[in-house]
Length: 327
Image (cartoon, rainbow, N blue to C red; front, side, top):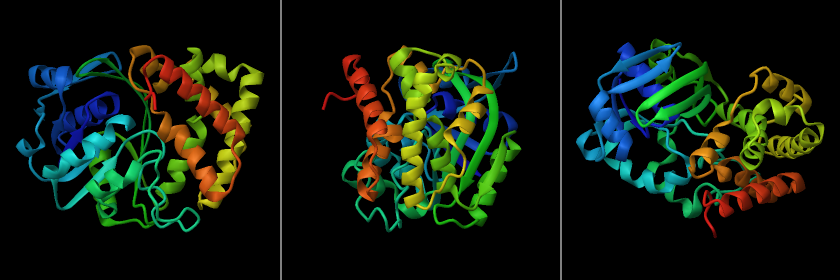
């Protein structure tokens, strides 16, 4: 299988390095700047279990140099996607699948959901630009349950977890989903081919939509956030609102926020991806985690005062620090 990784940051770097080192796929990567230079100079590099795994990398800044692929994994940050999506056209053949391995709710999430309507999700795809560039029929959903970071451009550090969930947006198990999942499994990932990827996406969002932005605003690690009863009461109220929205979308959640937080606590004193982005001065992915919940609440008639408060505070923090658009 020919697989192109678009964006070789933390998640993209992990996927690319393991696929290339294992020989599970013929891997290329679309990158730019210091990351492109590092990949061309050193190849894929992954620090895992105290050792560095490496493999040659076929890297380009121009997608036309790579040509049509069997699968394209999009692993860029959400704020970059509207600019990236039209550029990947040279990678797309008639049967190419596109797999967004990104945080939060993707642009295609509400396609065919009667409660929301046909209009694009303005919070993550203003004007439907991404949808027009990629097309719903190509999409294979993906949920990443892995803790990974970028030590320097082109060098990824795998901290914990190997879980990947893939599945069709239309709630069926397809041959292309099995084939793609098989390639990931050969690379050493723990792969689940889901019959309802939308529910898996919403469940992950429900679990990390609060701790991530709270960590960015406060600079606190997971243990400190989860140990503060006042902060957790606020987070659990926001999670309750998101659960009510999920029920309207066909993504019900039976678990309580309190029980979900106990699961999160098992990760130890972790640093969330949004905290890492804030500390590194990278744009915050607030729209795909909170802005979209704010929007969906209004579109399905669920009040979200706690989600709105958290979104407002995180957005203000981002704007003050130049990590979120001013308008």
